Length: 272
Image 1 (tube, rainbow, N blue to C red):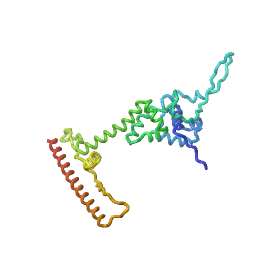
Image 2: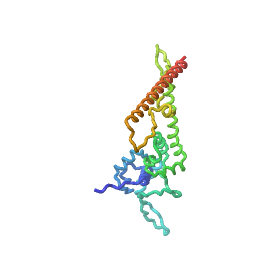
Image 3: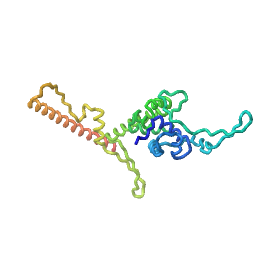
């Protein structure tokens, strides 16, 4: 059995635009009008996944109006019946180079969706896949709609900055928790300072000072690959690597001890 034809990203964008601007519910009518070659169940799944939503402009379109014949008068004064305008819309491939006045498929709600996707680390290619458009269309939206571009930048840059600040506070013990408790019939506000998180400290230092704090010890050895070294040479390389690793481990342990002691002293001073 032959597989059902799939829609291109541009065709999905056209179908979504048609559905969101129409007040009718369900997807059967969309299949009847667009003839997309996919079932209403398939469209329903895509709509649920991508968050299709009816627009206010959809109230303008009425199926009742579409089914009526419109009376018109010709030049001879004769009243005739004008056939209703077809609601059929042909799914077309949008050219990557948009002409003047061509629809872009952009929606205002895409701003929040793009922001949330970028919080998860999405790139332009993944944004294009989510919105069922090409990557060039995403670039066009950035140029044509400043709010869309700002949402992407806010998701990428601001999110990274907020996470970095949170990691820094966890590493230095600057997270403060305030609780309201009832003590002897009186409402008392209690402030607690969360101790520094060693895991956050390691994450911060490994990324900010990798040469001083990295766990992996790299031992560079110039070897002739044409001649396999003898056992004595291999043993010597191994002993030196183990010795270097032990020194590095002791140094990290001492630095960690000094850091924890320093942070504890700062915490006592602030509490006083």
